[in-house]
Image (cartoon, rainbow, N blue to C red; front, side, top):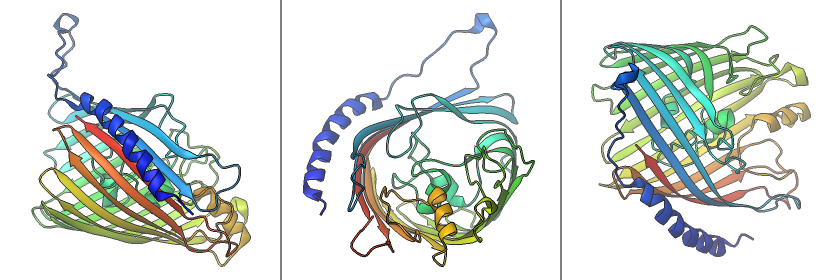
Length: 388
């Protein structure tokens, strides 16, 4: 059995230290002024954004392997965003991600990584063209994910299961290529043509991936109904860091976004074909639903998400699923990979730039190999988010 009281006591004690240390960094500071006029460099159009996330978390697996490492640890991640407006229409931007690395959640580190780098042209926000590296625009939920050191767009710290399958529990899937977004008062269209799901420029098989997202909304963008499709053929790309398979997926989403209340979710189907394993195609149903209530300086949120493969018990399909399935279990008794994640959390803004976060989560594996074993995982996270 899991000693929840003991874990909670340890988390609360350590969180007090974390808040005192990190909270000092969240005090609003005057902007840094640099006099570089003598060098002929104009920094007046350079926008600098910083996001840092300090975490303390504990995970317990009911029947973890004997050699499994304990997963109770502090972790830290940070993002540095630099965007330079070259003129009224062109901008150039990069994002650097960093952290100590080696943690359970797969946050970047110890080396600093250059993730996003792009050139964007805008026509009064009605037409936006981007070339470079960006998050794959598969679903409106892409803009509501935790991305390494930045969880400010996410009502909860961990991402839902489908997006975890693509890029880890606290990451986003970067791709390289071309993206365009057309916006009207009631309708948006986003398309992309990319190298595939690899996060580098390498594309040895010469295949491209593509995505299409259509979003209808009211003029205030409070009601959003979206449909997305994606296709990528990377099963011959041995360097692929993303989905090393031929992948087709569709996703339908609905979000209701009001100042004090948000509700939304998605349902879709993803089809994977990895011919190198000799397995038949694998169809995975994916879904998510969440509710968020916002107060003046705080919010509470609940979410459930599902990952439901249809494998028919085929051994080759199960072997391949081990390489791409989400979930936080370390055990050896997961069979068909059917999984539901339950999440609940709250956040409180104690300064303009700082927020305390606290989440609990439960990964419920629906079917195990043996009835007497369970790979279910329960966990809690406490952290401080600083964004400027």
